[in-house]
Image (cartoon, rainbow, N blue to C red; front, side, top):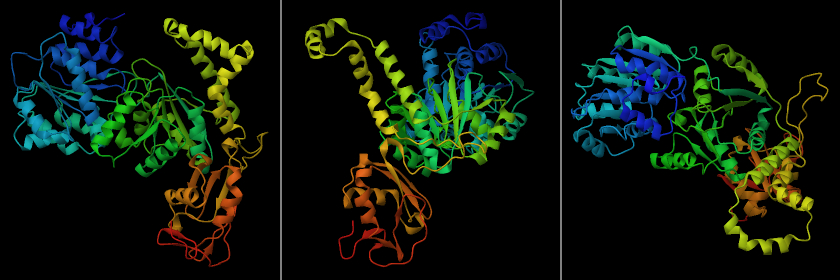
Length: 561
């Protein structure tokens, strides 16, 4: 087995990586480090995210810096602020027992004056996002004429984000470079153009086949009706206790909507999208890294640069348009030698898209049935049991309390005690999923028959349909406020609210149905009487008695809410 010592790294760097817990090099490190240490040739390294690329270029980059020279000798370009900060931090950690290299991270969203002062203080390595580095070049602050080596990290991501012009300008400015090290998970035409323009006869170092997924990742998919996708998402999450995952949505509006629903349903979740201020983005990412968030819901653009090594699941709430994007999404899990799961929740028309991704990425997808309520409860129960079994006991600290504990529980048998401890958390899931319908879609001729829409829903709630929707100017927030204020329905008694163009459905506890149904049917919108049904709504005859006016519900002369 190859060791880091075999690769030619100096002793001080070996001490640093040993202190960080690295024992043996990954395939990309074993392939790249000797070339980067002993050659000035350009090279292209093709490897998926999470395979150890930062150490592959970072260790030889550090070893080839002359600590006596205080000018910028190396440049690393990254697509996002998060990756920029992470790479700079890793370089500092690798060299903790070596020379005190001056590493400066340069990125947008932070004080440019502070970054200018750090560069002028004698930066030897600059790790930068393209946009901010161009700003510094325009200000003639960053001198790159002494840069010997340039690293393009996640080059495909950089070009996907529209940084081609900035990358061109920067590479032209590094006029005395000796070599370019380009790292990319895929090789689209834009990356090839960079290579052909700025690299001289580059050597190609490939870990696995091009555009191929990480072998440590299991690929799965679930099929359901469009109206059931959110319910399917919750079941998949609940059927995987201990999940620590990323949920990808196609748009920022969908990201916000799903995050709001999951937070309201009691999940430790938050959203990451383009509308967030940098301070809010940093706060969300910090909570996710510290595992104070179980689920992070994000768009592809917002998630770029996320580097968390122990993500267990990537969930595609709908498939991306490009196979390369799926590669990047799935590459967020299965990192650092761990296994991971990339699963997709789709409607039937997208099953052919799964086949296309299989052909292009060589991934093997497994189709799974959406977990039933019974299966979710079973998973949660045995997760609870395992946690109890593995619970660390602080014997000395708990000893003084044991006599009172024994006395309080002395009337219970061993079997009864086990049942009650297991039921503490299990009862919550049992109450929610007790009457949950099967939301799988069955093929024609299946012995279970065709999928039939069930108006019942999880947790003993009832699903009601209302003949109003987005076209009537109604929002989920409006409707939730109406139920809470007008009919005094507590939020925990309201389930999913799914708003369509011309109708909506929502879940509510049965004890509130009579009052809510009667109250809603006193309203009219655009001259159309509101009607509540247990099935899909049908057009109603006009009846003008109460109105939804100017974004407000009104009942005769009553005050608008």
